[in-house]
Image (tube, rainbow, N blue to C red; front, side, top):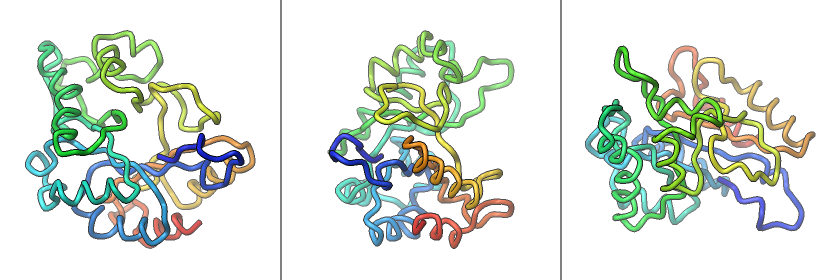
Length: 227
């Protein structure tokens, strides 16, 4: 994500953070070149076992991720495997929160923070990570472990629009541009509002959703980057 503390005068580009969740294969092939061509930094939500746990990352190597990281892509932990964990076993939560960070950083990559993965709990179980849909959710075992492990975490406890500079380090949300209700028109509107109000906005994209029925196309996303 973009730092707003490095510049005495805020630029329009400092108002927008761009985040990508998962789909490392497609990100590397189609999206990363677009970002480099436009000198746009971004963040990547990475499960630590991306090369084995999910099909979207099995063709990606740690060498590629390190190269992205050296060229403007912040790496955030997204857990270990983007799957359920056993709420009743603390070790299972510890694996997702703490070990995921250790596993990524073992490959000489600095983990900036943690982004909440969108994983549905097993039937009859409570929301994973205690939901983190409101600030008080961070008072849970999961919330406290996240804050002890990471300086910054992103979830759904606060709106996607951000006051700048922000002093909220845990729970800020995002606007998903690639899926469902996300659209080029809405994304451009949010950017315009951020410019007008001198606020910040984080736009999140699932690279693997682009072009699917009912979702933003790659061409539209390219237009958004240019905008």
